[in-house]
Image (cartoon, rainbow, N blue to C red; front, side, top):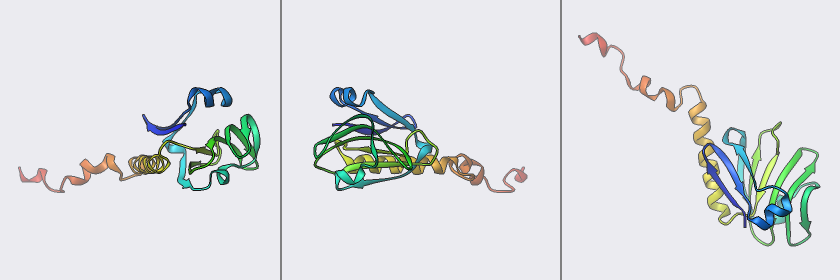
Length: 144
């Protein structure tokens, strides 16, 4: 089963060797800044959109690879039955969505949400980078 994790500022999908053969790639790496939303889809088949572009699908069992649809291209590594971790990306990126039957879908989605939120907070004006300047009180240097 695939692994969905956050590593060095990226969302990473790692595929086991059988799924990697079917998808014709070892995995996918997407920057955290590209993450728009993440959720768990309880029904595995609802995470699939469009038609197979590259990879392999066996109806009712699994789908691994890329799928093309009107909104772009999705990367999927989905197995039936079970929940699927879905990571939606901002428009204009290489993939529109990542859909993965992960070992721990709930935990993976929580990790992606938390990391994406921290990433956005750090990049926002007045975010974590300005905490030191904000903690200084005006007039503190005037006491000397």
